[in-house]
Image (cartoon, rainbow, N blue to C red):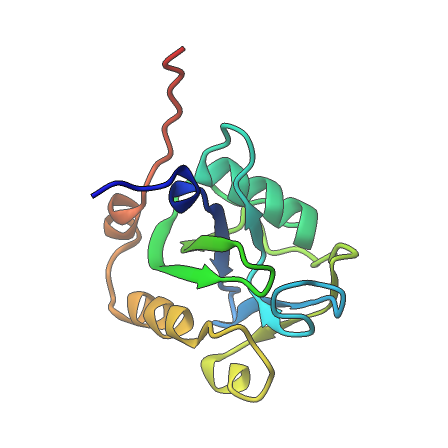
Length: 163
């Protein structure tokens, strides 16, 4: 079976599922000007650029979009294929992440609002279909696993240059 090169080109995005000390998750409301999901709540994150790793992308995007600093390490909660309204395809990866310290959220101009929500509260606002990630994150936190074991489950990013 042969493939056209265009069948192998996708936008790759990574989003951070961040829980605060009150057990609620950070969601940002997308601008009405966005091509995909205008006016809907989502997690902070963005497109992987150049030779950035997923972790570098998460750290950069969360800082830019929410003003928060992420700890290194992440746990994959979900991967999803999206056919965007502009005709492009995107592969999106949702990761459970932690912040260095819980500080004030400062949203970028790409967003009009933010909230810290529980799963029940998420059901009352327009969102991009992110309930499954919150349910899985809640289950991980409720499992009683020690922090040491959760750290073992974290995925570390590695960058190679084969030039």
